[in-house]
Image (tube, rainbow, N blue to C red):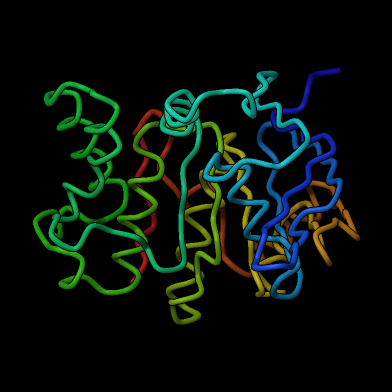
Length: 261
């Protein structure tokens, strides 16, 4: 049996607020396999975002162990965690988190700049990403010159430019209208169809229902872990969003994404 891509063991995360301790995660144990499509749901304050931050190496647990692809990443230094994060993890956020003064192309290239990739390689990848995500005529536009859907497409292109093993998406459709949000979800699902692990935090029950696995959190713990078979999930997705085959760019850059509005 293959080892899980993600293995959490006895994870505790406690925040100290004045004289009080807030237990954001309580003795959490979780395995996620490579290529899974997981939705994390639950009320505000249930620990969803804390879990996502820990998975993305943006935060550390107080106790417990996090194995990523068999490596204990909880013991790594901040610089070592940053390297793993840049190479293996992509992030998509509700509020996009684009750099206002940078163009779409420059925002997409930013992870490669930070990773020290040479300029010619960056240029080739950015050109392909702009094509894949239907942004070729928006390459020089700053975020304030783009629509919400275009901003999220830039954010997804940036998240995938380093060809990560998993995408962590925190309310990726929260700032978008239903139609544009649908296109963004199709992009993410297209990447998952090509083998990228997709973990989505959402309050949207319809979005969560599309995932093949749903985790429901409450008071820092996973109360429900429900998995659906792949055929049932694919039928649900195809019925509401169209075929996944055209939903996102191929990992080798050979396919064109269906653009969002």
